[in-house]
Length: 492
Ligand code: SF4
Figure (cartoon, rainbow, N blue to C red):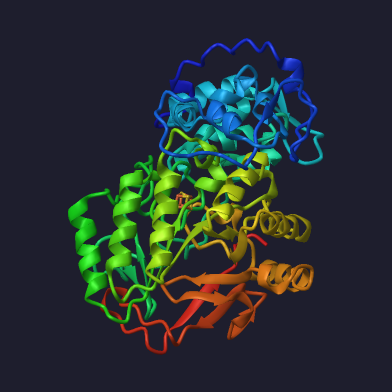
């Protein structure tokens, strides 16, 4: 083990004065059952760049015109049993308490986990805390993504049964559930680097390009399609990182300006949440000023992993975003936010308030989910996710087949799963809230409807697609007439 858990001194377990509370069954929906409740409202919030000394809670409650009580759900996580709302709702506190890297992860897990946890869904077998921690650290050693998880996400995990928790499964690897890679899995399955005329700018579609100003995110997903670049180096991967350097950005802007056929830019990463408010303004104003650009979106998982930032009056990120959105509208252009929720458990009353704030500010928010085995690959979960997002006025835009990225074999599903989900969910919600179920074609064919395959051999698990409108460059290879193959996971 290169930096195995055994190499580290395990911290003593923290005393847990609210252990009785922490042992209560986990509640997904906000409820009013907690004795200490937070009074907050989405209405009347003032986010005018208040000085950092102003607590977000004070700002919110003082500005509220209606009162609503909300459950302090984070106290169910032992580590934060005594954390007041004022801290939990502060973005500064969130950054300071983000679990990043192995030592912090070890400390957190040691404090958060009970003595034993169920090993499987039946609960007939258990695993000790130390066994689970060893399992996670062996997973971390094998994974392609570094560890970084926000307190918000960690507080949505059911720590009494983490192995079967849909959030734990996405962000914390366990060696015991990982499977050997399909031989076609790679770090850059979409051939983004080959389709990049400028470092950090992927130009594959005729009218749209992907701008990657940074390769850092507030949370790292174990199934990241950009495993080749995003996050810190891991034991197995040296990342092709994309630093937020102005000169590199200017090269990208110059390319965009020189391509009159480009009308649409996705600003992603990494995550736009990791750009400063000044960077959001700079990039937004620059794109608005380019005549051929008519639309752009900021891609961020922030709303899903750290929604408190949207509500924190002492942080300027959302103000900058709203200002850019308004500027774009005045210029007759469209700005949107594309976010990334995968499971209804990620949605809380904080999410709803944050989404409400963006809705009232006129910011269009769309969601892109990734279909993940054991997370959202059943009709009930995916259907509820779509409905819950729609109820937050977050438009369910895409559900992606999990990309063929290294070390994701245990999270991938066969194509048949996405076909079945689409078929069973369509008709259960208004058409404009129905996402497109797509495969982002390995090799850089772009997104295609999953049911648009040319052929799908369910025995071999190979599906074949064509993408006639996608040109790209793919390192100089002509894409004309290319076929693209998606391979189901091996162990079906
Ligand atoms: S937020 Fe997006 S870019 Fe960042 S790790 Fe997750 S999937 Fe990758």
